[in-house]
Length: 300
Image (cartoon, rainbow, N blue to C red; front, side):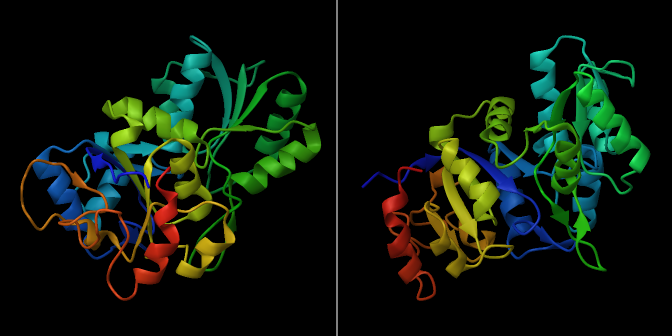
């Protein structure tokens, strides 16, 4: 049995972990305050490429959560950094919103429709037939095809909306070209996040609410993974996957350090973080059975 690591740095998903429908989830404000107070390195990750980090920081503040702009890492930022590593001073045709175009500009890219190096597709409120047609023609002409994230649908008050993955599927059908997807569940996004805060995977935990993105990417990136049940995945969903998170909790309130040690470090599954023995499994009545099911997942 692998020993539960001492966690020094944290990566966390946003929706379903810290907020739900623009409302802060229990314990989220306190956990962020704890990390900020202890100067613990952390990043809030999101596949949403619509907004800039500054926009998202403001939206979180309205929900009562204090997340500095430099503590937010979006799929748009990860995509821009990845492409900047591929081509120095490149060009791109972008289908997306200000979060993506701003990130691409800041990474040194020129936005153009004339023989770009890349076609980059991200989230947008208004997918235009003209823009998609232009993307198809440019890819068929030799531009490399990139997507910020694979999500096929997104939420809205009226119901689901088509998202990046649905649009890239349309483009793939018309071009025969699959996009390279930078965002979750590609561990590339996690590695770029680790590099940004100078963290090592062996001493970093990933908190997420989705088995198919947060947990699988964290596992493949070598991080300690914590599934919260406050978002998409439910306890019974875990059994459908061939991999397991290292720990399952009801919400981030269970990660609060009530010892107030102030050293910014603690065992991700041990005493003082909301409940667990040194093996990292939950010990309250609700979590006991699943904790036993997940104890063999320490390799993650």
